[in-house]
Image (cartoon, rainbow, N blue to C red; front, side, top):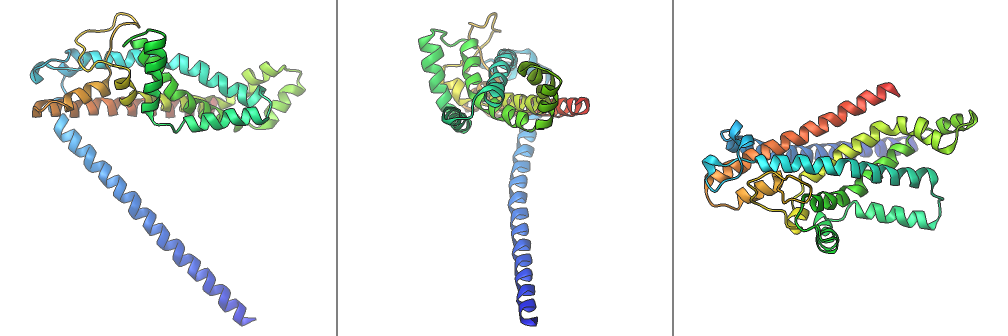
Length: 291
């Protein structure tokens, strides 16, 4: 009996040793990643802090670094978000509700689900090629703000659908059963019982998807977004630029002053991303308290 006990103790000791070694390995790997990110952020802040002035937000791009700003890129980014957000929310959340609450669970829905999950991991440049073929050439939208917004909508739709489905699945089945027991219809149950509970997760997924979209450059370069725009778009069919495109344009110039402007543009973009992520946390906490 003691032999078996000794062997069991050795196995437990070995497992704890392996557990401890893996824990140390994961901590080291995480620390290396965090340290590299901190070094990169500090380097960007040092380079771009001097150029982070009101002129950066009030002036249009210029061939002279001292007179250059990113007003058109900031406005273009905001316009694109205003177009993308309602379209992405309606189609993304609508598709998630249909797949989770109305569609029959058969081979067709499984195939659709597999395709959506696959599309969520497709490289962004593929969506740029699709947008070029569909919106720019087939629908003749040219290099317009609408073409760019629709292309980025295609990029974020799979992410929104998957996150909304997860939020809807997390709603307990007892809520649906209680609603049906009170005589509610299917749509009344979904709209008044399921969606209010799933709304925090849905909104978080939508905002995080928007955050990814405003940081993408490859799809917009593919569909012909302009790197030099010294005007504001007056309609959704006008030419445009966004912050990542403007940063890309400044980085391509040899003068060191434009490198500093690019660093300041990266700081603005990071601040916008942090603001969107913070708003996602606030919305989630607010609606979780109301559920």
